Amino acid sequence: MRKTPIDYSIVTEKIKESGIPVVGRAKIREIVRLVNEIEQATGESFIRMEMGVPGLPPAEVGVNAEIEALRNGVASKYPMIDGIPELKDQISLFVKNFLDIDVNAQNCIPTVGSMQGGFAAFMVAGRRNAKQDTVLFIDPGFPVQKQQLNVLGIPYETFDVYNYRGEKLREKLESYLSKGNISSIIYSNPNNPSWICFDETELKIIGEMSNKYDVVIMEDLAYFAMDFRQDLSKPGQAPYQASVAKYTNNYILLISSSKSFSYAGQRIGMMAISNELYKRRFADLKRFYSSDEFGHSMIYGALYALSSGTSHSAQYGLCAILKAVNSGEFNFIDSIKVYGDNAKRMKEIFLANGFKFVYDMDGEKPLADGFYFTVSYPGLTGDELLEELLYYGVSAIALSTTGSERTEGLRACVSQIRPEQFAHLQDRLKAFYQDHK
Ligand SMILES: Cc1ncc(COP(=O)(O)O)c(C=O)c1O
Image 1 (cartoon, helix red, strand yellow):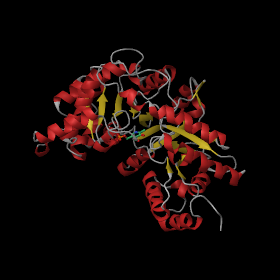
Image 2 (cartoon, rainbow, N blue to C red):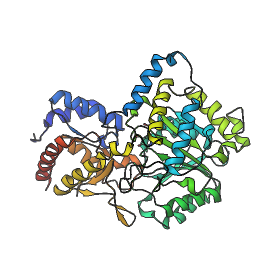
Image 3 (cartoon, rainbow, N blue to C red):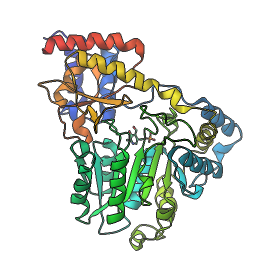
Image 4 (tube, rainbow, N blue to C red):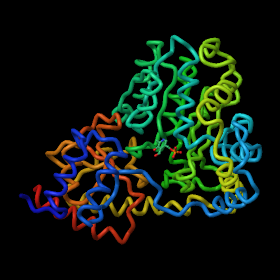
């Protein structure tokens, strides 16, 4: 029996009981449950880096507005499917202020998290042309989006972008798009899990490809303005959050409020469809929806069928947050910058204990410190490393579940770790290092 910081026999037993054949292949929520059970059985708390949950309090202005809206009786009323008018206006203003993009308020729609926004986008963009039936992931990416496509029965293709940065991206995209079967492309920027950020050259290439092959770009801005290397916090002032919307009109922006405003629990996000795409008509949409108009199909086809709109009070909450952000009263970046500071320190601790970074460069520049980073340990696959670290009280997810080719790696999320836990992380990784030298 090995001696490890977390009782060896309990961890082994709990892994067996979980019924997960290979821990490294488990879904994020399955790891969450497994670690909860180990914590409960051993009384030890883990350094929990598996799930991207905000570790900060929610934007207070939102909470107060929600309470007020509930007191005013909104709970008994169905909201409009495409959102309350004042929220639509604020989303449109937010997109102008922080992306420098013009999207009509009509085309700005609250969704039940970006998660639902993505699902609805797949349902419409993925079905607008029978010949273009496949979604392309610029990976690594967020595993649940592939689950969504499986649920919808929509095929997808994927490649790991790490070796195709800069101009190399053009040829790689052409190799997929020239086949004619791709309906849409999805990527997150900053990227979950690698935290690489596409630059203007790459976004321009993606935009040009989108125009050339008539492919819809779903730009997943789940970590909006969280490239902390630049100050993206000033409304109406450059620099802005980089976006493909500067280079094509064939886009849907998915903007999450979960991380940027620490509002994950209320399940409200934003979808902004370009003015041009919203109005476009596609005969093949009629296979699924009553209208051939893209925007109409999104609202009265997809979103109606999914949830008939987004929680009424949460819309008031998000509206108040956006009002405060748009007016410059609330600097949302100031309240979340701490993730970058914590990542910097945590990365030092991993490096000092024999770990290496998997995605370590962002094009020509070193990677930013943000919400996630990726690590490996010499001689172990990601799946093995994930399981082995459980015996040392550290949890993460394997990159193999994210469409990454770098199967030796893990994704570590910094959000739940507080500076008081750094010493604990150091002790556990030191013990791991000693046992695995
Ligand atoms: C890349 C990416 N997209 C979408 C989401 C979902 O965001 P939301 O909480 O707004 O549904 C996440 C959440 O972790 C994410 O990482």
